[in-house]
Image (cartoon, rainbow, N blue to C red):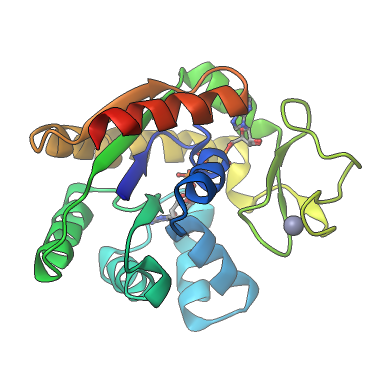
Length: 217
Ligand code: AP5
Ligand code: ZN
């Protein structure tokens, strides 16, 4: 399957994407994780991305689209993928459509995770991620690691993301409403949007998502 995951910052996209990708046997492609890996490796792309991410703004389309395209062209993505955090505005959605058209493939669904804003703020405030791999995501009270400050998956050190500071979160939410939400209408026009609630236990939401995707097949 080829799926796009959409939802506000802190909706649980990364948390669900890891689980859904495993269940559906497709790679999880997160542009946020790709940027964070570039930042920790101190690449030129990482340096550029960091200045935008720390301010809560979108990284320019040109570099983002090139990076996503490169990742989608890897052999493991040949039979499907789960995109998390891309596309994030209408021009990225148009670029993705063009890419898919060139390959003569189509999306199966756009899974929209709905969650109230006060919940998002609580989730982001308590989020801790792993130094080794930013897709290893925890929450100090909702999804606590077995040992405080230590990643359950790989034993790495957990820390708070630089862009999870309160002020930056406000900008990220604003950017979501103004730039990302319009892609939901863009995909509704293509009949691809499936909306589910992202409230409740993590495992229940995964089941909800799988059920909703089954109906789309
Ligand atoms: P990105 O990394 O994509 O961040 P985001 O979209 O803001 O989403 P988050 O990672 O904040 O949240 P999430 O929905 O994944 O939630 P999570 O599962 O962690 O992007 C970061 C930045 O990179 C952007 O601001 C931008 O600068 C740049 N960027 C990325 N892509 C780009 C693009 N395409 N174009 C341009 N720029 C781009 O969960 C949150 C917390 O809640 C965790 O602590 C988790 O444990 C907890 N939690 C999860 N589920 C539950 C639950 N059911 N109940 C209770 N707690 C839960
Ligand atoms: Zn880890």
